[in-house]
Structure formats: structure tokens, C-alpha cells
Image 1 (spheres, rainbow, N blue to C red):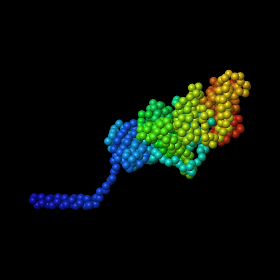
Image 2: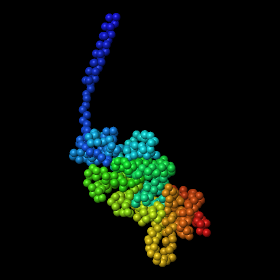
Image 3: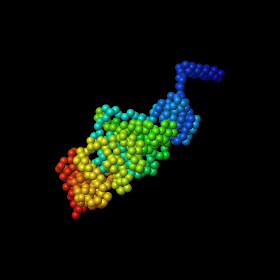
Image 4: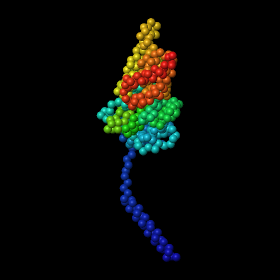
Length: 513
């Protein structure tokens, strides 16, 4: 018994010696390294911004990290402290809270997994459909493609809206501004354009900046009801969210779109709207003591929009040939197109679609003022068939608007003037179009050719809508091959024109008798 106890003790002692030897060896091999880490502290916080002291190595646009994994972007870099735009609510932050470097810039997830989802400006899901499983992330701020990496804008982006596709054409890779007073139908045009991209291999991104939650929910519902979410990403920031998120939103949306463009796809991005974006930037700039300029906007307000919209382009075929089309929306006040922000955006973009409250009040929808609207890309991006229609239509409509203003004085009109006015009224009726009613290219052309040729001159103005429906139906059913050739962008021959006009005349024959 004593012998066994002695044996056990010697075994335990040997195990203990081996353990100590192993620990000594590990301690010898262990060479601790010093990690120099700079930690700052919040000196003041509130209204979506914070000032931090102690981060002397902070860089502009770097992400700052706060307790609870809250994030902010370094905006001002001063001698004593840095100013940070907060990307999360600031209720839990207070003076004295710790702030740290991250060593990285803001990135958002990109990829096909985002299609059909509703996300915030940081790519976090808002639709309660679970986590977005994407392995690819990309910086929010990226350089615009070089001039030599771009190709001309030649392919059309069909909106399904007659007055735009015929008179103010938009090309894939273009930047077309939509502007007008409040409640004139700016968002409606953008949503209709998204809905019309169904089956056209265009990925759409709707970026809502500072919108009301109720109106945003309505837009998402309409997109879902019309199956547009199958190819659309909704990036949403509401008016209740921090101004920092509203400021970041359009850049994040563009980054998401650039992923698809670089894969060779066509992308449409709607910014709704950049007036709210400018106001958010003005708010955070003034709170961080940046010097105000015209209308209290900082001097670099032009730069923040130009560096955003310059990223829209059509890439060369060697780089994939993808395109990113931007439809920025801006709000005017009392029809003042010469306002500071609208003027800036007009000078940056490739044209504008102006919506008139006067036309809206008359019930002319969409309320597009053709005289003040322009596409600087023009017919180069338009289907060939439109070119034989658009010139005559724009001229007759402009003449009508000018004559209509003079005819109100009650002077006697000669026969030619009366005919011009009657034709113009019918052109105006034809160009009217309800929301969520996109029209295909062949059907648009058949109606426009008919009104140009005077086929609708004898039909009462109140019956023009019914006549238009009959013409579209007859052309769709009786000339399917011709419709296919028009969609393939084949030129419209004189025989084709004659075929369309004969069908239109037959469709309206019963209405004139």
C-alpha cells in the first residue's frame, strides 16, 4: 500500500514537471506585440452629427465606430477635433462616449441578391424578408468612369409614355432631370418608366430620399402589384431618419447599380429627389459649422451632385458595354426653374422634363411642358420609326400652343388658323396618358401617325381617347409582323406608313359616321 502511494506521487510529480516545462517553453516563444490604438471621445452630439476629440489620425470619409456598433462618417477634419455625420440614431450617444477608428470607408452590399428587396442606405433589409446573403461589397464613393472608357448613348430607354418617347427621348446611359412644383406628377413618371422595363433586361433601382413613410409604402405596393419588384431594388430613406443616411442614399444606390453595369447589364436609377438630398447636406453642413453660401447651401453643393451624376454612363464594349441611366428628380418653387438647386442640376444633366402646374390643373396628364423640356442626346438614341413622326408632331404642337394663347383674345380666326387649333387640341388629347398605363412602341407610333395625318381631325375631342384605343387594338391585332419589325428598330417604309394609316382610318371610320 505504501509502495503504491509512493509510485502515484512520483507519477504526479513527473506530470507536474512536464507541464511546467511546456509552460516555460511557451512563455519563451511568446513575444507580445504592442498595439497602438487611438481612442477618441465625443465632445458634443445631436441632430445627426457629433464632434470628437482625440482622433488626430482620422481621415476624411473614414468610418468612425461608436458604442453599440453605431457608425458615422468623418466629415470635418479640424486641428482640435473631427466632425462626424451619424448614420444611426443618436439617442444612446452622449458627451464622453468612446469613439474609434475603423480604417475603412463606408461600403454597401451589391449583387443579384438585392433584387426584389427593400433596403436602407447601408444595405440593411427593411422588408422583413430575412438577411441579404451577399458576399460582395463595394465602396459608396467611387470615381466616375474615364471619358475614354465611355461609348456614345445610342440605345433608347423606352418609358412607355408617348410624349417622352416621341418628343423628349431618353437613351441608355443618359442623365435626364425631372423637375416641377410639388404634386405635379414627377414620381409618377419615374415609376411608370420602371414599370415599362418589364421584359426589357433593365435592372431598376428606386432611391427614395427623405420621403414620407406612407407615400413610400404606396410606391412599393404599386411596384409589387405590377411585378416590377422582380427586377427592381428599392433603397429607402424616410424623413424621420438621420440626415446622414439621406445624404449617403443616392451614392449607395449608384454603387449598387454600377455592379450590374460592370457585368454588362443596363441599369436605371431613379433619385427621388435630389432637392431633399441637397437640404440634408445643407443641414449637416451648417450643424458642423461649414460656411454657408447662396441660400445657406455650402459652396460644394454643385460638386456633391456632379460627382454623383457623372457616374451614369454607357461603357465601351471592351468593358462589358453596360449602361447606367439616371433619372434625378428635383422640386421647383412657384415654377422657378432658375432656383439655385434646379439650375445646378440642369447644368449637370443631359436634359430636363419639366412638369407644369398650369397643365396639371387643366387635367393634361402627364403635365409635361414640351416647350421647356429638352433631351440633349435627342434623336440619336431614338428608334428609327420615331424620327419620321417626332419632328412634325413637335412643330404642330408648338404652333398650337402659341396660337391658343392668342385666340383667347376673341379675334376672328381664318380657316387655316382654325384648322391648326383643331389639330392641336387633338394632338394634346392624344398625348394625354393615365398613370400605370405604359404603351408599346408600335401602338404609340400608330396613334401619332394617325393624328399627324389628320385622320382624327373629324372626331370630336371628347371621343379621341376611344379612337386611340381602337387604333391601338387594330394595329396590334391586324399587323403583328409590322409591330415586331418596329420593335427590332427597322426603318419605317412608306408602305409601312400607309398600312398603319389605312388601319387607323378603318378603326375610326365608324366613329365619324
